[in-house]
Image (cartoon, rainbow, N blue to C red; front, side):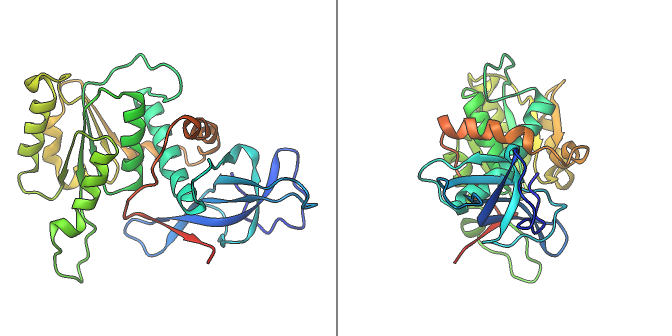
Length: 286
């Protein structure tokens, strides 16, 4: 993973490079103040300054020191992938964490890998937490891997106890719209009192009851939504799979390097959209 110590005094080894960060992605700590830096984007800088500059995305661990934009860090080559032409440093930094995290979860929990042939088919998927960066990535990766699988998404507005309730159109609709634009078949406000009834109707419409591919087979919970609305578990068919994404990742926090190469391959052949989310933000050089 990227080493955020002041590395100028130490020469990089054969598998390390110096990167001047132009943008950093910050993941909000749920229920806590502050955030952690999980990724960056910048330019590889050779010591002699003569080599061609290369724009790269960088995977950064949360256990490292504070990272500042426009600071030079030392990073493992395996923690990098090139930034495709036309993608800004800001968008590049925002793509890294949600996509490598989603790649890991899909592979570990569902046996899905977006590169190569996937023989496993899934009839229908419900994604909870559509307002999160990881859910944004799930939608795009599943659409690439299983284009015929209907995706249902539930999105929740960011709650602010100190402010009066806001209109649905202002706080939830953008997340629902982004979900369908990214490939979801159906999206809904997770706080709707009749959420389960609407989702059941969607399962019938896009699954077996409406001439589609079958019943709900997988629920991916990106934000712990099932704890708030446990009744959604009634929708999962017999033998279905529920994935609590926070628990899925707890056993392995050092996973980024193994997926940066895959992310690079995906970016060569697909257009990945930066997330529209309320749990991550990006800072850039002014």
